[in-house]
Image 1 (spheres, rainbow, N blue to C red):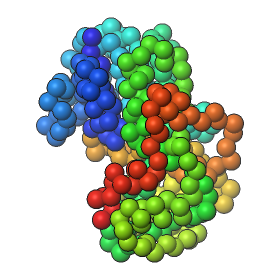
Image 2 (tube, helix red, strand yellow):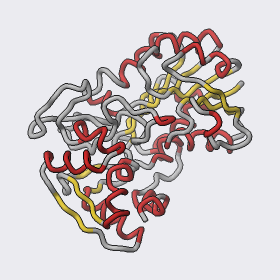
Image 3 (cartoon, rainbow, N blue to C red):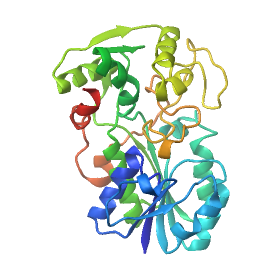
Image 4 (tube, rainbow, N blue to C red):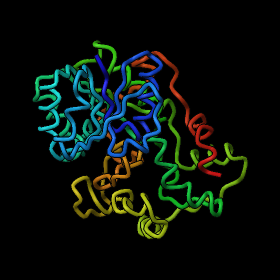
Length: 312
């Protein structure tokens, strides 16, 4: 029986595909643009769009377990098609913001649709993605060796996307993970100032750091363009998970909403998925990938070395 990875061309998805191939699994990948997927030759790539369920049946045929990327639109129909095709378990790439109670409209409905289906489920709920640093800071680091941000001394526990993938792959292959929800973090607490220093060490050059107020940060990243501009309101506390206007001086936003910041197949995430865990945290039993898989949890320094060319 096969394993289907939706979101297979994203930051986490590519790593999941790689882990499954290494384990000798029959891997299928779902993407809106198969011609640009650039996945290993062993992987069968299917064209499909989670917002258009009618495109999914060919990829679902013969699938036993499935990684579901969090797209709420038509999710009940997607899950029903999976059940009809004989899928036994769905692993949801979710968010620790669900555990915290901040996310009720984005990842949570996807989790609920899977649980209602009666299929086996596992929810993988990362907190702060390390790769958010890339989409925020890399353009200004590359252009002028400069980082602009808020609350530089607020700690977080950024997690390498490969660690998230290790947990997701384990959940797809091992029945012991059924019925579990894993809140994932990296192995160490680092402030943004610490993270910037780690990136500077990785590229071998000093970085100029500017701590600004949320309003100035929002304008800076709007001007930067791209993903950061699209998500600036959410990132800096001017918008909540529902897209409602908030006060950045009193907001308690959630954590990641999707796959480490990069839209899947070029799709803009709804409302932006990055956040720096600056909230007043409830009691969350954070785990590292070591707690789930037994393998070593990757440090932020390892992440920075893995992405050094992206910052140069």
